[in-house]
Amino acid sequence: MAPFIPFQLAYVTDDIDAAVARAGPIFGIGAFRVNRGAEIETGAGLALAHFALAFVGDVQIEIIQPDGGADAIYRNGIREGGGALNFHHAGALITSEMAWNDVVAAAEASGADIPVRGQFGELMHYLYLDRRDSVGHYLEYMWQTEAGADIFAAVPRF
Image (cartoon, rainbow, N blue to C red):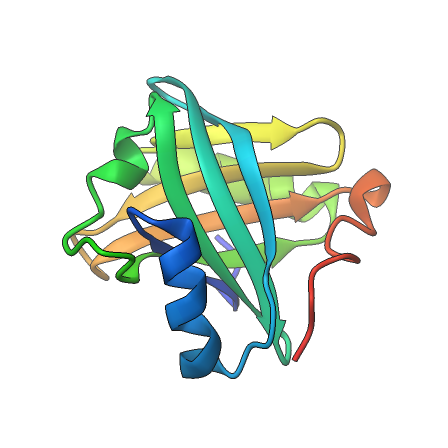
C-alpha cells in the first residue's frame, strides 16, 4: 500500500455546534463549513451525520456528529460528551484512480476490517480501514476524482 500521508484529522462529538466552538481556538480556526444531515455509506447501512470542515494550512480538520441510521462507527467513538472532541481517524487524500485502485486492493488484502466504504456521487470515493489495534484509530482513504476537484473549494482555510 502507498505511504499514508495525513491530509485530515477527524473527531467525533455529541454536539457539533459546541465542538466547533471548542475547536476554533484550539486549532486557530475562525470558521468551519458545517453540513447537516449528510448521508455516509457504512458496512452496516446508511449513517446520517452532521460534519464541519476547515483547513489549517494543508491539514483539514473534520468534526462529525452522528445523527441516526447506521452511525455506530461514529457514535461508538464518543468517549466524552458535552461537545468534546474525540479523535476518530486520520485521512489520506488519493488523487489518481490508479493509486485508489491500489489502495483498495491493498486494504482488501490486508485482512483489516473496512467498516466504511462509499462515495459522494462522482466527486469522492472513501473507505475506512480499521487500524485501531495497531495505531489506535481508523485510517480513511479518500479519492478525490477529477469531477470532485473543487469539492473542498468552499471549506475555510486558515
